[in-house]
Length: 224
Image 1 (cartoon, rainbow, N blue to C red):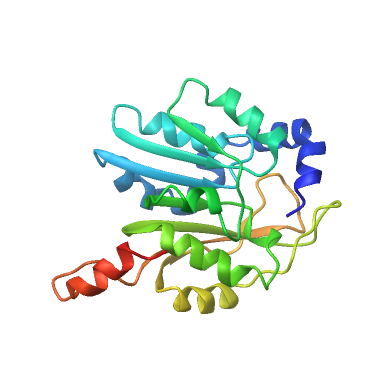
Image 2 (cartoon, helix red, strand yellow):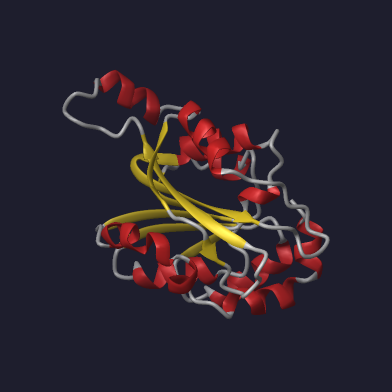
């Protein structure tokens, strides 16, 4: 996961991350977020929250509602910056990481929105099945799981593994997740010509409807 690199270069990386707004980075799926932000109660999990740009935006937009916003960041130096940025907002920071997210799972909480931005490439192919299974269990029945895929070489000592839509879709099917939306070849917001992105938005295949057996829904809610 290159945690040491993120700790050692936290200040430089934070400046890069905060140079772009949430709307710039996440414009491809922003229309899916707006209905969530209209809810009276809202639970959000940002995995790999970095220096806090995204949870800062989300917490500001959710003010005045009953919210639970959790920022997960394994790099302590980055997390400290995020804690300062969000100190006046309802954001809880947890030092945890994929694929297990043991501390988050221990909260026995499910979320309306799970954001995994610029994280998936740090997981090795062998870690990804467990990571996605963990995320799917943390997603509530009507929630959204948003995953960005980074295509392109690593510019430094950070370990980045190749990613593909096909691989993620195969894993998603195994985790009872269905694709709601997918972007195509987003340019890198930091201007790196060799880097481009895709964003995939998933929902649960077990989303409740009039034909869904109660037993299936209950099994999903009780998943470990």
